[in-house]
Length: 304
Image (cartoon, rainbow, N blue to C red; front, side):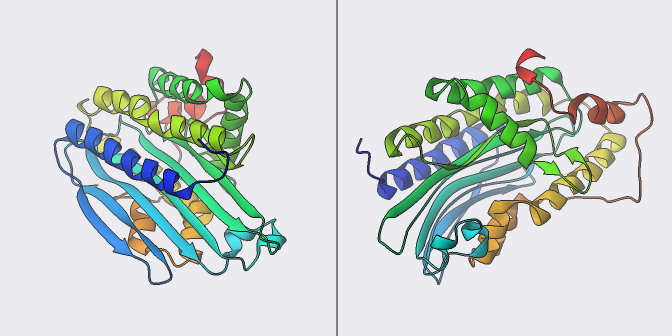
C-alpha cells in the first residue's frame, strides 16, 4: 500500500466494517437494523443503521459518514490555527449500543479519518478512534475480556500503544463535573499519523476489526440474565451520565453539530430512557455501590 493518504481505500474499508458489524449484531439480536442513507447539502452524506426495541438492544446505531466542508469548524481547528478556515474531508464509522438488560454494558466504538491541507498545499491528515465500555452492574470478567481485546488490537503496532491509548481513554471519557469516569474505559486515540499512512491505517483497521470479538461475547453472556425494576431504574439513572458526557464533552458530537452534520445520526448515541435525581447516593454495600467503588476507578484491567 502506498504511503500517500488514500481516502478511497479508507472509505471502502469503513463501508465494509459497518456492514460486517451490523450483520453480527443482527444475528445476535434477531431484529434487523433499518437503513437510512442521507445526503448533506454542504457536501457528503452517510448511511445510518439503527435498531430500536430489539430483543437484546433497546437502542443502537452503527453509522457511516463521509462529509466535506469549505471551512474547518472550531472543534477540529482547536490548537491548529494554521488549519482554520481550510477545506476538509472527514469519514468514519461510529457506533453506540444500549442493551435492554441492565447487566449488559453500553458500548461505544469509532474509527475515523480526517484530511485537509495547509495554505501551502501540504496535506494534513490523521486517524482517530477507539472503543470503551460503560457497565451499569460491573463484572470483572467482562472488563478484563474487553481490555484484553483492545490490547490485542494495538499490540502488533507498538509495545507502548496500549498503555498510551488506555490512559488517553481514561482521561478523555471522564466527567469532570462529576469527578468520575464514564465507565471502565478501553482505548482512545486521535491525531494519529505516525509513522505514515499505511501503518496508521493498518492499526486503525485492527481496532475496527476487533470490535465484534471484544463486545459480542459480553452481550451474549448478559442479555438474558434476570433483572427487575430496581436494576432498570439504576440503569436509567446511570444512562444520564452518558448523556451528560456526549452533550458536554464529546469531541465527535461537537464536530458533527458544528459542521452541519445530520442531527438524527449524531444524536443516535443517546439512550432511549434516562432518569436524573437530585443528589442520589447508592446504599452502602449494594451492587449499585459496587459500580462506583470497584469499576468507576482507573485500574489495570488486564491484570484483574
